[in-house]
Image (cartoon, rainbow, N blue to C red; front, side):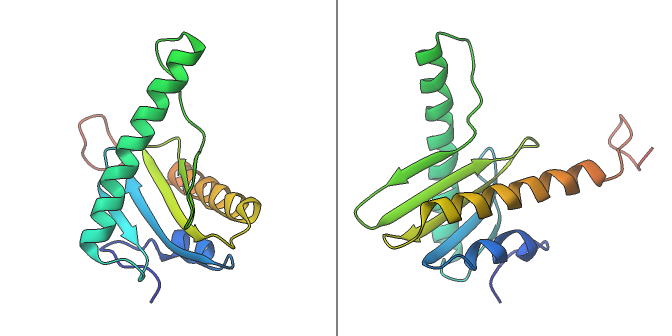
Length: 140
């Protein structure tokens, strides 16, 4: 199994793991709650990654807005390069985010392409979902 969660998120994370040298990936909400994660992480590690990822995204949105002299800014991706490898964080338009970690040998262009492709698939799936009634009840 490549994804641990209570929902079916393997279809999102599994293709990311197919990129050579990718070690782990997490699917999370914008506010830092884990939706799914890969086997290389324990649940506590995935929760820690999600919390940090959420904080990093918030800081990056604030920095981008400050540099642009705007009230707010949306971030399309965040790349962190370290001596151990790369972290790529890509938010979706509907409040979730994919974060992936690849070792120093990973091809960042391939990782970015795959993560952005999966984020696009998440968006397509969200758009295909039936609209909900205004009161939070059954689909309209």
